[in-house]
Length: 111
Length: 110
Image: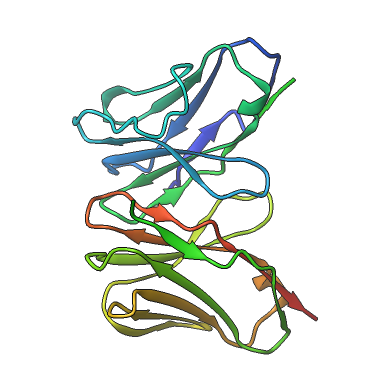
């Protein structure tokens, strides 16, 4: 079946602009995660959604970052007033229980 | 703070040899363990999961778990150049989230 999809695959923006990144999880997966990966670095947890529960936002680096998940499916990660240090690959993963399956990621470049 | 530790490498292994990747974790109540492979410029893909002490084999890959010593390892037999990647260890510490190590970069030398 279809895997996790993310859009756009690449995003170039100017410092100070807002960006929205989208994630479509695998159908039926109740959990959805967002991670950030800077060049040559490990995965940095950002936020976790599980069903209808309140999201775990403990990894969001600042209040410029927010995410929502509509209808328990598609999720959007929004970064306001982007900074150059926000440049990274943003990965989404979905999970039916514990095992996570990753999307291809969105490469964000802030000029 | 629950942690997952991996040697960042790079680990260089001759083609055809056995590559051994190790991971230690901080909490004895950990329930499930995962190995992901990440090629350069790509997203992580699941290789294996292991839940019980001992060995689990899948083709050329063997995961080994020792809960008493709090380590999990991945062996790759008959290493191929296509195995060159970063390998991420991930641990479930009893909730639904996974904690990832920073990964070990493996290079298979032809």
